[in-house]
Image (cartoon, rainbow over all chains, first blue to last red; front, side, top):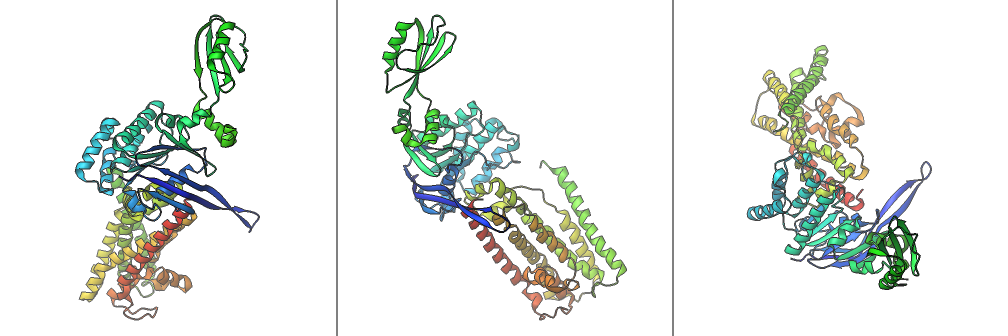
Length: 323
Length: 248
C-alpha cells in the first residue's frame, strides 16, 4: 500500500477567448489552480473544500490523470497521473457526484461484472468485495434492477461500490453527496469512514457541504480562487469561531437581557439567544450575570457553526480571522 | 433482451430504407442503359460491397455518435479514469441497438448482382471479393473516427461528422468516375473512398481504370485500409491529448 497523494506547486491555467468586435479576440488566462502544495499520507482521510469555481474539481482531475497540469508536479500512489494515467487507473477509485459511471440500461449487478473485466479483478477477490459492499450498503434488493430505475441514493451506493471493487489504494470523491437526502448521505459517509478505517484506503473528498466533512475528515484543505488557504485539522478551524451564543429558557417572557458582555440578543417568547465573544467574556461569568437578572429554567452554549466560520474565511480570507 | 420488439422493427425499417436507396439507383438506370459504362448489376456489385461495409461499420463503431454528448456532459472523464483504451471504451461500453438491416439488404443486392454478372472468376478476384467488405469497413470506420475526433477541439454536436459518414456511403454507391473535379479527387483519394468499393469492383470486373491509374492500384486496397487505421488512431490520440489539455 502506497496511497500517498502529493501536489507540489500544482497549477492549471486555461486560455479563454473572448470576442471583441468582429475579428478581434482577447485571450485571457484563467488560473483555475494556482500553485497548490500538499501531501496526504497513506490511510489519511481529507476533505477538500472551497466555494464553487475555486478549483476543487480541476485539482481532482489533475490528480486522477484526466487533465495535464500547466505547472508543478503531482504524484499519486507513486505514479505521475498525467503520464501514467492507465497504470494509475488500476490503483485509484474515482466517484463523480454528477457523472454516472454505471451503465444506465443494465442491472446494477451486471455493471459490476463488467467492471470486474475492465479492472481484471481476480474472481475470488471480486466475490469477496462485492459481498462486503452488498451487505454494508444494502444493495441486495436492487442488484437485478436496471440502474435507470434506481433512486438517486441507490445509484450513489452503486457508484461507491463500482469505484471500490478493484481495491484501490486511493479514492477520490468529487461532490459525492450532491442531491442526496440526509439518510442516504449519512449511510454513504459512514461507509467511507469504515473503508478508510478498516482497509487503510486514502480518501480525498471534495464537497461544498462542510457538515459532511466535519463528521468524517479530521483534516481539511480549503481552496479559494485556485490557492490553498488552509491545511489543518478541523479543530483548528473551530478555534477561529470566537462568537458563541448562550441560549436561555426563562420562567416567563421578559424583555431582552442586555447584560454586560452581550453583543446581540434575539427574543422568542420565553427563549432568548444572547450572542457574545469568547475572547471578551467567559461563559460562566455571563451565565452568572443572566441568572442574577432573571429566573432561568434551562440553558445551552452554542459554538459558531463551522459553515459560518468557513463562509467568513471565503469572504475575508485567513487574515481577517487571525487578526 | 428488453428491447426485442424495437430491435426487430428497427431492423425491418433499416432494410426497407436502404432498399429504397437501391430502387432509386435502379430507377435512374431504368432511363439510362448504363451509368458511365456500368450496367445495373455492375453498379449493384459496387453498391453491395459499400452497403455491407457501411452496415458492418455502423454496427462496430456506430457508438461514436455518443462521443459529442459524452464530452459535453463530462462522462468522457469517466472513460479516462478506467484502465482501458478510450476509443475501445467509447465503441464497446455503451449498448445501443444497431441496425442489422443494412447488412442484410446490401448483402442481398450483392448476391443478386453477382448471379447476373459474367465474371471470369480467378483466385485473386475471389480473394478481392472476400477481402473488400473487410477493407471497406476499416476505411469507413477510420473515416468515422477521424471525422468525430473534431469534437475534441470544437465541442459541438458532431453534425459535421455525419456529412463524412453518410456522404461516404452515398459516394461509394456509384462509380467514382461519374463525379468530377477536385472534389472527386479529394473524396476518392485523400479520404480514400475510391478504395471502399470502386477499385475492388474494377478489379473483379476486369475493367480498366478510366481515371488512368496503374493497373495494380486495386491491389493497394489493404495497404490503404491499414494506413487509414493508423491515421485514425493517431488523430484520436491527438484529440484525447487536446481534451486532457483543456478539459473543455
